[in-house]
Length: 381
Image (cartoon, rainbow, N blue to C red; front, side, top):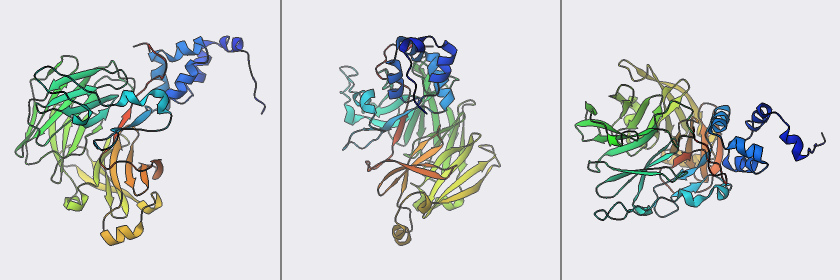
């Protein structure tokens, strides 16, 4: 088919509703949107509106992936997802240097520990006080607060609490969820961006368990953390209640500690992704967090069929060569680091795609957000 070139005036005569229906079909990647905005004033005015951004994200179902934060101080703390981020501007993802006040030391980029990335926000922990910083790399907005707890077996995350399609959450209300475990009890408090304070009431449960290093997973309105024993701790944000959940008995073995991760399944079902020697096991929790619920193995995926790992390594060491380094909740995929790079594994479709070469070891925190490169002044809702 021969291409047809129309004068710019002809494009301007297309009705707005048809133009919107055409533009919503393009990729939501920020570079693509920037190029559209450069075509003409009409298109630029369309892609600057928050209504169009929401429509675009709802149509495609996922928020663009910008890259990954890590806690490996010997390398770049932010790993861009692809070469196009040169247009977005990688410097905006450099961890902030903070000067709290004269009584507190300067917090440089190396002093921060990344705890979570979710809904366009990054939660950082730093300082001896210690301090929590909620940071939006896109807008540059920073909110600092104290934890008022010691740094022993604690963790935290950030969650947008607006009821909308997450992605363009920059002006939406959010909460920090801070979890503390002592070995005798586990308790959770929330800090609200609306009240700019910690809530008075705490969720608390007497339980012999310590929160693990693995980041939380959000499924529906429930946050899940791993404990150092063979349990999860579930925090129901709607009910403000904590629920310990025992994992399948077989996973009590030390070899599973770094290879079991909470994942969402269709219908907001609680699931597990387990690397077990040469297979990836997918489990589900029948009945959710309620008492009397039980685990069931749904299916297994032979690792050798989706990732090029060395079979002799599995046979000789009786453990997988790969490691789960990230759970991407909204996409329902996990990232597995193998010998030759990082693979995105769709555990429901049983497929994989290599997305990166060699990366620093350790957990990777996926940063997803919507940003229009080169287009300033995006209208707010």
